[in-house]
Length: 587
Ligand SMILES: Nc1ncnc2c1ncn2[C@@H]1O[C@H](COP(=O)(O)OP(=O)(O)OP(=O)(O)O)[C@@H](O)[C@H]1O
Ligand SMILES: [Mg+2]
Image 1 (tube, rainbow, N blue to C red):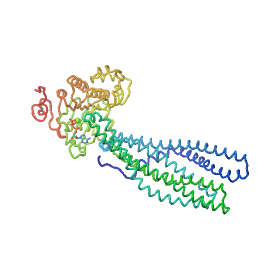
Image 2: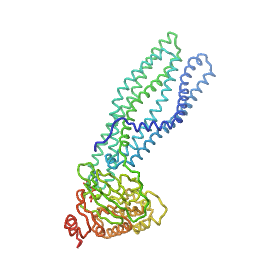
Image 3: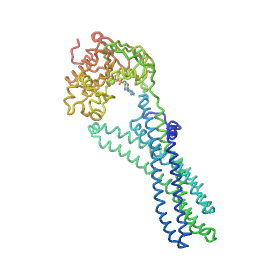
Image 4: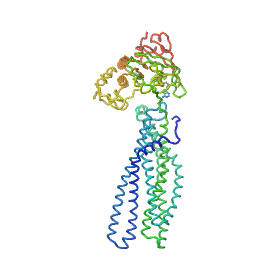
C-alpha cells in the first residue's frame, strides 16, 4: 500500500454532519419534545412507589392503592410508546447523516483522478462508503449525539426530583460524578488507537475478500486453497483479537463501570438514608424513590461520558472518509466541443510526457498528429506505453508536460464530459455490467430503440451470436460479462462504442489469442467501426495493422518509428523485427 493522505481533523465529514443536522432541525425539535415528555413520564414511577409506601399503605386507602397500581402499569406503557417514537426519530436523523455522507462521497469518488483512486484498495473504498459512513451517522448520531441532548434533559429532571426528595442524599450521590469523569477521560485516549486498529482490520478483510473471489480460478489452478485458507485464517485471528478487545472495552465503559458505581452509590445512599430515617428527616417511601432514581442518574451520566469515547470511534471513521474526500478531482476545463458532424476528429500530441509516479516512464516526449478520418495503428512491445496513450487521450490521466489537442483545442481547456462524448472507447480489458446484452450495449442509457442497437451489433459482428442466445438481446451476461468469451466481450464493447456515434474511435485490442474465425470477425468489426471517423487502434494483430493508413511504433514510452506498413518494413527497424516472426508474408 502506498503512502497517502490520512489523519488530521475530519473537517469535511463533520461539516457534512452539521449541515445535515441543520436540515433536520424540525425533527430534532420534535425529538426534544418527545424526550422531555418521556423524561416526565419516566420520573413518575418512583413517585408512585413513594405514594404507595408513605400514604396509601399507612392509611389503608384501597382505592388509592388500586389507582397507584394501575398507574404503575400505565406509566411504563406510555413511556415505552414515547421511547419507540424517540427511537424512530433518532434512527431517521442518523440515517439522514449517513446517507448524506454516502451520497457526497460516492459522487466525489466518481470524479477523482484515477491515479489518486489507485492508492486505495477497492475493499477500503467499499468499507468507507458503507461502514465508516454508517458509524458516523447510524452509530454516532443515532446512538450517542442525539441521546446526549436527551440525556442532558433527563439528568436535569432526575437530579431535580432527587434533590426534592433529599438534598443531603443528592449531594452524596453527586460525589460519584467527578470520579466517573476522570475514569472516562482516561479511557478516551485508549479508545482512539483501539478503534483505529479495529477499523483497519475490517477494511483489510473487505479488501481481501474483494480480491479472492474474482481470483478463485487462479487459486484453484495453482492448488492454492490451503494458502488462501491460511491468509483468511490470519485475518480471522487478527479480527478476533481486536474484536475481543473492543468488546471488552465497550463492556467496561458502558456496563461494568457504571454498575460498580451504581451499587457503591446505592449502598452509600441506603446507609446514609437509614440514618436519616432514624433521625426522622426522611420517610421510607422517599428513600425507596430516591434509590430508584439513582441508577437513572448514573446511567445518564455514563451515557454522557460514553459519548466522549464514542466520539473517538466516529472520529477514526471520519478521518478515513475525509482521506477520500481529500483526493483531487480530475481537472476539467470549461470549453465544450461544438456538435460537429464532420468526418472524424483531429488529434495531436506535442512533446507529451507522463509517468505513473513509479520512477520509470509512462510515455516520454511524444509528438504526433492524427488527421480527420485517418486510421492509425499503434504497435510495439508489451509494456511500451500503448494503453497509456489511449488513457491520456481519454483524459484519465493528465500529462506531466506537453499538450494534447483535440480538434485544435488544448485538452486542459476542454470539458472532459464534452471530450468523452465524442470518443468511442473500447478498452483492452472489456468491462461489462452484470445485466442484459442490450443494457450493456446501451450503457449508460436504456434506450428502447432496438433497431439502432442491432445495427451497432451487426457492425460489430456480434448480432448473429446474440440472436443465438436463449433470450437474445435480453440474455444476462453475468458479473463482468463472465458468461461471454473474450472475443465476444470485445465485440460487444465495440457495439457499445459505435452506438455513441463517436468522431474518434479509440480501440485497445485485447491481447488474448483469438481463433482465426473470431479474429476475422473482430477485424470486420473494427473495419466497420472506423468508417466515417478517425480511429486509433492499438493493434496486437497483423490483420489490423494491414488496414492502417499509418503506424506508430511505441517502445519504452517513445515513438520510435512511424509511417506506412511498406515504409516501416523497408526500414528494417523495430517494426520489422517485431513482425518478422509472424508467419504472414509481409512483402
Ligand atoms: N496504473 C499504473 N500504475 C503504474 N504503472 C503502470 C500503470 N499502468 C501501466 N503502468 C506501466 O506503464 C508502462 C506502460 O504500460 P501500458 O499499459 O501503456 O503498456 P502497453 O503498451 O499497453 O502494453 P500491452 O501491449 O501489454 O498492453 C508499463 O511499464 C506498465 O507497467
Ligand atoms: Mg496495453
